Image (cartoon, rainbow, N blue to C red; front, side):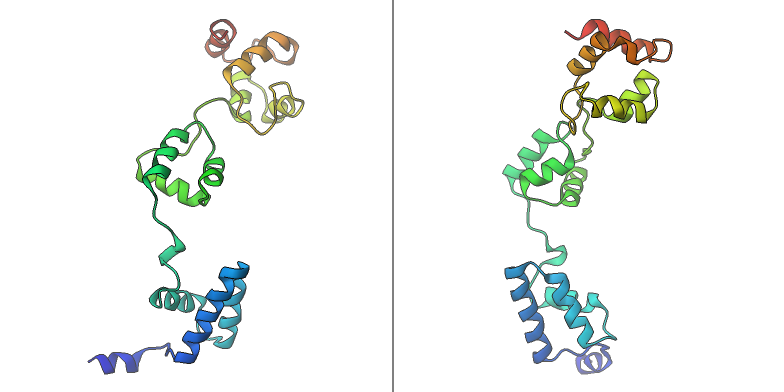
Length: 185
């Protein structure tokens, strides 16, 4: 039966094709050009989809499925510390992982990668009752501190005290505004 199954295979591998595939992976490790190398191989056999080459690389042990590496306990601990406080992109850079890997790991832990500390431009627009463009303008002009970071409660309280003419009290979320103005020191 095994011989019959091999006879029916659509893609027949030869030692020469395996050697070419090994060469592409060896070269890709040095130069970081795996996609280009797989493209050259796919051109050799136009009827073979690119996935066939990638699957064969897994069979030969040239790569792992998905190219992932195992998470260590130290990485998991660091991830738990950073989730909710730091963006997924920043966590990925810190841990040397992809954004998608961090998202997946957070999901497996039963948590979200969404940052809960501080405010986004959209949050500010909603709370102050203004457009996102106006809130974005405030951030771009430095009224909340440095750009590119989430805006903390202290920065919002300072903005409320120092820039009263920028927003209309009739449009703000009243409960939120009072809490920000009087409870944050």
